[in-house]
Amino acid sequence: MRLKVNTYTQKLHWLPVRQRIHFKILLINYKSINDMVPEYLSELVSIRKSFRKLRSSSQILLQVPVSRLKSYGDCVFSVTAPTLWNRLLANIRNVSSLENFKSLLKTHLFKVAFTDKSLLSFKSLQGSYKHYLGYC
Image: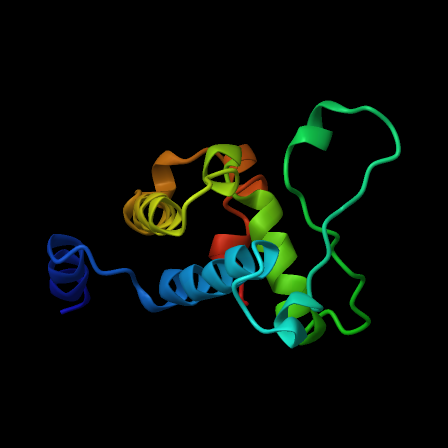
């Protein structure tokens, strides 16, 4: 039965629950960076400032606060949002319009959700897709 549900969600281009949650978190994050949300949400994320000239200084990366509780602390919005954001592909992070961001993000999360995990190498799982397969 599980196979049929995945097949139908894939045909309808629906995201599974975990990727849908990540979509919503990243969308709120994008809006907070671009001043499209109330101030109390914008205060939860801060852009990482580099004092040296690095290749990454042209990218919009967020400061990830240290959480004290590894079980629940890493699932808080102020930790999860920057973590997901920093692991997102640069071409998605740097999009200027909200509609393009939503489209690219949904396509990316759809590919992550329905890519056969056995085809991915272990090193790639430790990289950008590690959090997508995590518990938060």
